[in-house]
Image (cartoon, rainbow, N blue to C red; front, side, top):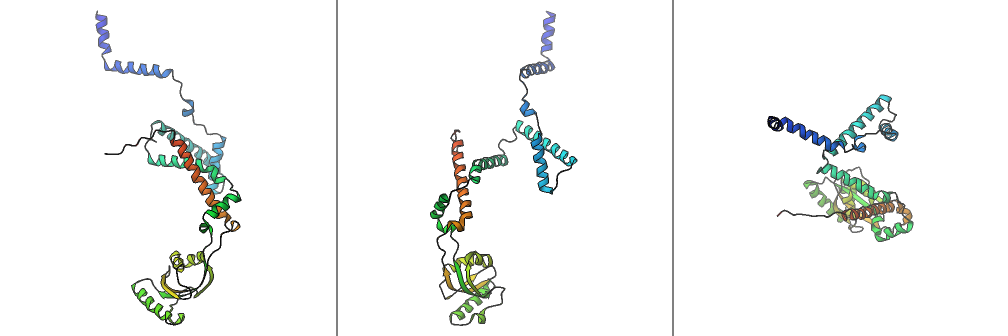
Length: 277
C-alpha cells in the first residue's frame, strides 16, 4: 500500500511528467528515418564550377584557392540558412518571395518561346496585322527659326516673331542664335526626335505645308517651323524590319505561353475569394 502511495506521489511530480513526455516523443520519432535529402548539403563539381565561373565573370580572372574556399563556405552558409528558413516556414506570406517565385515560373513558361525561331510567314503576318507598328517614321524637309526660351517672355516674343515671318520677314531677321541648322533635308522623324524631342516631331505631323507654324517647343526652346515636304513611309518590308518583327513575335509568343501556363496551373486550385463586408 505504501509502495503504490509512493508511486502516485512520484507520478505527480512535474519533472516526471516532462521526462515521460520526452520519452514518448523519442519513441515516436525513433522509428522515423531522417530526411537525408533535406539534411545533406552537397557542393559537387558542377556547383564549384559555377561559383568559379561567376567569380571569373565579375573579376576577369579565376579565383585563388582561398577565394574559392571562401565562396564554397558562403554557398554552404546560404544553403543552410535557406533550408532552415523553409523548415521554419519563413517563406510563408512573404511578398518578396512570392513575387520572385512568380517571376521564375513566368520565365520557365516563356523560355521555349524566347529561343524559338519564327518563320518568314509568321513574321509577315505580324507585320500585315499592324503595318504602322513596323513602318519607319515620315521624313521631313523643313526650315526652322529659333525664337527663344520656352517661358512667358519667350512665348510673347515668339508670337510676335511668328507674325513677322508670316508677313514675309526673313528667318534671319527674327531668329536667335542656336546650335541648330536652319534647314533640314529629308530627315527621318527618329533623327529629328533625337535632336529636338518627340513633342517637336509630333507637331510636324499636323503642320501645314510651306507655311510657318508655331511656336513649337523643343528641348532647346521655341521654334517657328516651315515644313516644305513631308514624305510618308511606305509599307514595311520584312527584309528591313526583320529584327523588330522577330522581337515582337517572341514577346507575343512568350506572353501567350505564360497565359496558357497560368490557366493550366490555376485550374488545379480551388480559388475562394472572401471580400470584406
